[in-house]
Length: 460
Image (cartoon, rainbow, N blue to C red; front, side, top):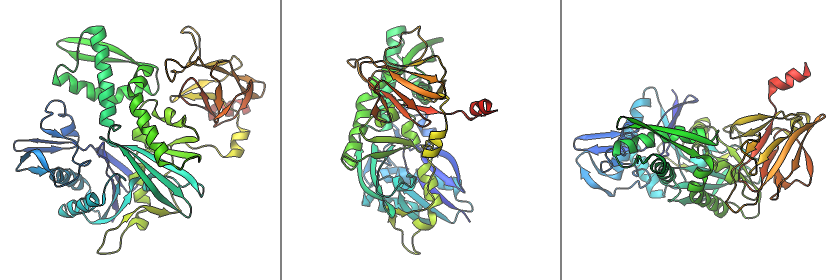
């Protein structure tokens, strides 16, 4: 009979069963009179009934009373129990055990309360593991690692080190840099754009405010690929439109992004190269991975969705506690790990492959004999890859990539300099598959890739 792994993150509780991820259940609860609704259905009412919708019961997991207790729910723990009970009802059939992947922000008291809630739901808890430890892939011995994840109401950065086992070395949190705060800042910016260009204020009425929050994930996803996105909303019998630019969004979210970067600096070992394992949830925010990759000595790897739940499921035998007790695991030995979405090519393969494209925000740009311009100082009519400057005062930055015989080369043309794998380009340099490029005037990172079909075509 299968074990189920549950990753507790109030932005979306993730369930893994038999190697498959089930739909997430966000940590929202609607308590209105005789009605108690949890999950996605409650989230859909968050702006329509703000006085009755709760979203902090996992973050504040405790026996503290609610602001407006009802017979259905008197404490934060009652809402967590209702949410967990619903989740368990969907997966309990045929399940012989549950492993929890728990964020490092949970205190010992919260871990104990979670166990009590699970037992009240008749869940056969087999073990608990730190979510960052479960999600993080294996690394070279002694490598300095951090795991970055975002909950609804806080950012959590976990320091890790892999020697003979992967172990947690420290946890840092910031209650101002959670997803809810980031989404609020993005929505405020979008609303200001609507007001400025159409005089329509989507935050004036609860229904259009809810509509804007519902549209936000798609908008953010598109801005990870495009420089701008048009947002259209229907209200009062009219369709209103506003354009949101990538650089405007980065400016609005920049202060919170920098708080996450500061957490990394506080949590990692000072002066050591660091591999930043970024959750897919955090990576959904445009520009965050690029900013973190721009930190001195940091390389960013994006983990697959549900990495903590899938990792806990894969290591269930090591996490499972002895009969009659439940332990919290903050270190795991070597062995199978979750495979990251982005991996560097082995050195030998990198040297033999010639890049065919530059990857920028998930879009591949072909490399040819005509130089491909990249930077912050590119005219609107000029072809190339336009980057957002890191600040208004940053000097212009620009480089070009081109095919020179059998080699792909980069040439620096800007005032601010160009970095390849964190090393400054002096004049020109040869590029290989997997190389990372950053124009110093921008925090964005680009990568060199080889498209397999094109390589086969050249070799035929």
